[in-house]
Length: 304
Image (cartoon, rainbow, N blue to C red; front, side, top):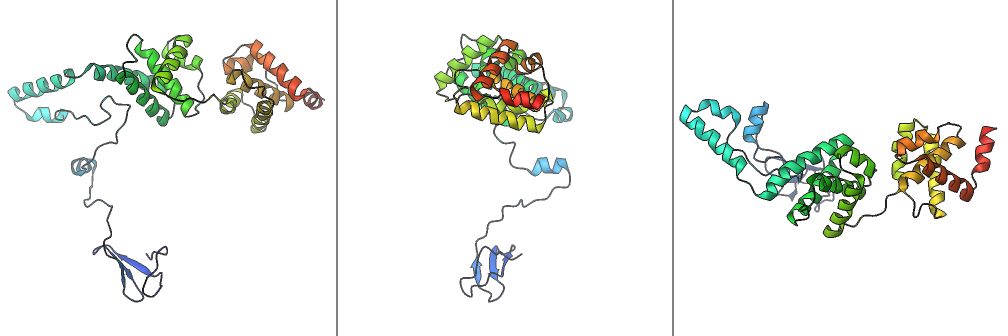
């Protein structure tokens, strides 16, 4: 295949052909060797089944904070190897494997248990891998700096997950984390603030817009209503109605108003249950939006 991005310095032709055997790029028109030290990034071996691939592969899985040893640890032998040994050697094999699991530092033992809990909560909340990796990194740093001492492991895990969700702008509330982890919401909030402060993690305030797709999907609202809710939120942000108010409450109220404008009736109780707030919060935010943004006429016109 010719390489159009390069040109021959001798004749200016772009008709260049790579010679993979010699590692050269040659001009097909004049024969000039444009490059003579090409690097072949492909593997130099072939495999025909999974076992051959495992034997010939010289690298393992990528590093990850979701494992206590970052995925760099190795096990003594494979389980299938034990059946090839004699009785005495087999006992030695099991003894070595047992001591390998026993010999570990306090941090490693803590990470083994905590990261398993972290994966469980992350799976329950259906969080993406990027959030899981970031939360594992935050928890590992907290353990290394001794921030877990005096606190329950589950609360620090939940705090690290909440911090990672906030950093990656994945909308999850403290109520959802409390339900998934079984820890009180106030305890998670306290641990989250302590960990982020001690580790110097800068978290921006939550954007109410991030919650709209989830709430709209749960309420089965149309895309038109969701777009209208985004417009209402942008108007509310310009009018400084969102400052000092919970992002879930203002997002749910904007969806409620947008649903009324588009004649998609939803009760305040339905919206409040989905958003995890009270009906009073929805009602108060709803009145503020109607009054400050002057949306009452639009709702009346739509009803007529």
